[in-house]
Image (cartoon, rainbow, N blue to C red):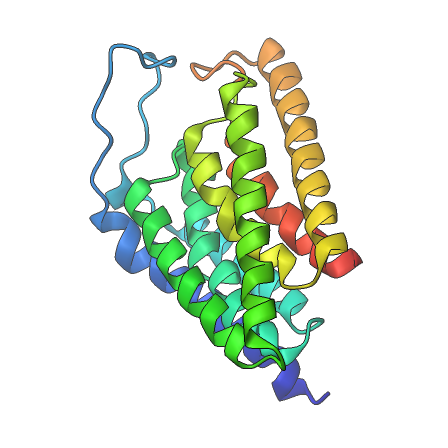
Length: 228
């Protein structure tokens, strides 16, 4: 594989991620304050101000790194994986910065995932079987995280909406990858949650032990693809 073929997917993913953060995130409507907000002492950074140098660098690095993982997969999977490496990277960076997975940006990424999944299926030898595999992976991930959310395990419903996107991406590489992505993302989230709790005991924060779970789930997808 020549250098251009290696660098093209990560460059495309980083460009899509940066474009989404720079052009789409500032247009998102702010969430309506609620009396039931568990963190009333914390002021969420406005979406319009998220596209600063630090978050742009973080988003570009996330997209580029995920794009590098794309080069380890069959080229037929690129239409789907580039969506998850690009715009969805901007989504999880937004979650990291605000603890919110904005509904409209999640829907946008979901629509692109649907289109990317359809394109990927058409490139396969058996489009119907592969499309059903993607659908099954998406539904299984959504059901699993919905059950976790219903059990009151501290998961936000935004993570439930994110799950089918990641489930479809992991299922594109087979069920071993789906399981690996699910387990790795969940385990990574648990580690981040424990570290956040321990850190904030010594360094109090208005969010308490609340943290963004979406980035861990997203990283689990790429670790699963890389390891399987």
